[in-house]
Image (tube, rainbow, N blue to C red; front, side, top):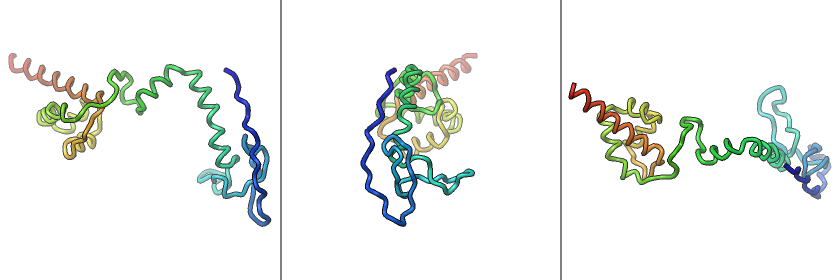
Length: 167
């Protein structure tokens, strides 16, 4: 991986006399004085109330190489993250995109009536609040992943009910 050259030093206007300022060692400023209004401040910890090390502009630029290097080291994880953009509820996403909720509504309502909201949420893998929202204020579209889970769970519940009647 080739290293990226630092950006050119930006010409900054001089800080007016009497205005609080600090030197920024970041890639854009490279040691120039900047007014404290151009810095973020620490909100907690031992440095609470003190300005951070880099100005806002340099601070935003500083994280990019780290992210780029991480993407280079973990290409599979990065690809999966971009597809899912999830917080780890389901590691094996097979269905991407959206479907109209009207196509799935019959199955969702049937499942909701058979099991109730709590059990439905548990089996689908969503929160109770999510099920409540779908029931009270149906969305226009739904993730294909959730639609597939709803249909799968409904099929399993119907099979179990059918087997218990035969026994």
